[in-house]
Length: 454
Image (tube, rainbow, N blue to C red):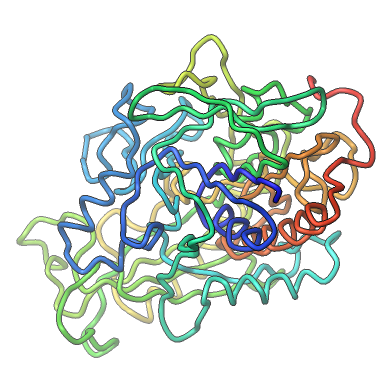
């Protein structure tokens, strides 16, 4: 039987694991710890608040230099940017100071709000045929529902070997073919080489290109055209009589989420309204909006970021990160085009807010770059190998045998909606194609690029 190694256990990596288990020995390696039983479950399913907090603490990465990792997400430091609880800051960038990731089994899938809107209009990847069928399949895997949050993760398959606290430091290569991975046991420091017929890298949109760079796979588009959603966000205190409080009193800070979809021209944004029965930000006890008995709504309007080659992730071999991998650096700018979108979003958000209540002091505001946690485009998919993309429509790195990529980094469009459903649909598409190649034994790329070292 063929062997496939999957680097990363988030939603996209878990999709590959689930769909390949019938045709290959599947080994999933994850640098972070197991947080839940079963592994990969959303921590919101943990009934004990202390257990939830401990799980989030455990996914915040190794202790490291300030500004890179190890900053408690629940800490407040005046004048600094801190990561959301359950994530840790990554890279060194004044351009994207809030760039953060989760390091744990399940990845961001252990913490996400479970919003799975479908891409529409200009968000869609126009060179993919029959993509709606893949989106349908992704909704089925994610248990998408319009009635309630889906807190199910997909990694619990007995046929899949999960190796937590195991860091992939390099991809093994024989010419233009990837033949396996170099793994480090983070408990002991021991390293080993593990051979595979195919490797799927699903290590998120920042650490996937980092691993390719560290392995000497450096196509011209690698790390370029980084996008995320500039995010206009604020909390409102709900007026009396507008919404009923959930029975049982306060529970998780987010108890319901409603999405307002993207529509070219009419509403070119993706908006999410999240209800909380308790105040989600600190307010003085005597503030008139503190302890509001009618609850609070978080209102986030995400706008498009148009891909530009100047917005990019680069890697510093001379200043490695805490794992010894090339240091991540980010160059990123919100242009006048995005600022105009934000101005329009303010108008829509203000009208929506007026229906429910009053904004808390200092809100709404445009959050620091990186706050959305939705990073895209750094290993983008393309229709042709023209130097502007890293992957083909089957998620294979152009000209590299045995290497498939997964995750939000593949999305090439100016996308406003939460990218999880799109990424899982791309993973379904890629896993289907890889399954066919494994069954026939034809793993090789039909044409090999002349140069991977740009």
